Image (cartoon, rainbow, N blue to C red; front, top):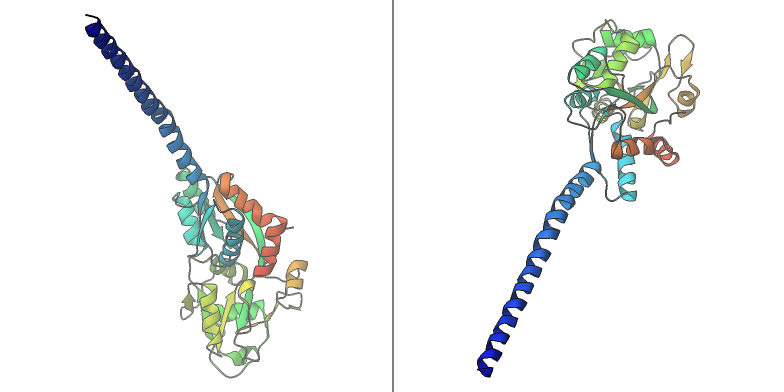
Length: 302
């Protein structure tokens, strides 16, 4: 009887230990999984969303945004900033559709674009991030180095077709234009031709500032226009006269406000930006960002 009692006692003890062990395993497995699983997953998703933005649009603004993003991400490894071009119109359309966090534009949004945005529940907010000097360029072999607004207008609307008519050689002018989705195209049309005037039909459209530089550099009869940051030894920037004398496209003249084709460069966001979009915009306007603006070839906002 004593031996049986000992056996029963040992058996009961083992059952109790097993029950306690099982209860402990369930508690340790279920409770942390339920609380940390949902909260951890949500937190990770929110962090990922907060540290990723898409920026799209103007090829004029593109080199500035790329340079700033590269430096910013080097200082903030957790941030991911995707930059792509396509033109101001393309970036603005993407903002209207809610596909990007920031639209880059080398012109102001049109009233029709703002109306479309608002109809789509988007509240476009403008941020001037730098200044540019739109530069009319010719091939370095071309002796023409000065043009008035009227002469530039005549070349681009088709009323002037030979370089001899503006002090150059007897040679047909090859007109290089930007495509209609470009903010540079829109600004140039409004500022030089007049918004209601059309470009000549035989103008050759290029999709980017870099493509314009290449086209003009390869043809001594060509003329084009580009953002100041793209000006290099392969093309020659001409002095421009809007009625107050010839002014060269130089950093000094643009900063002084004397160059007639100076223009603001923009970011557009849906409402006031927050998170990474706000931080990146503020970074370009910061002291460090100002150095990048200068290095790229543009000019800081005062």
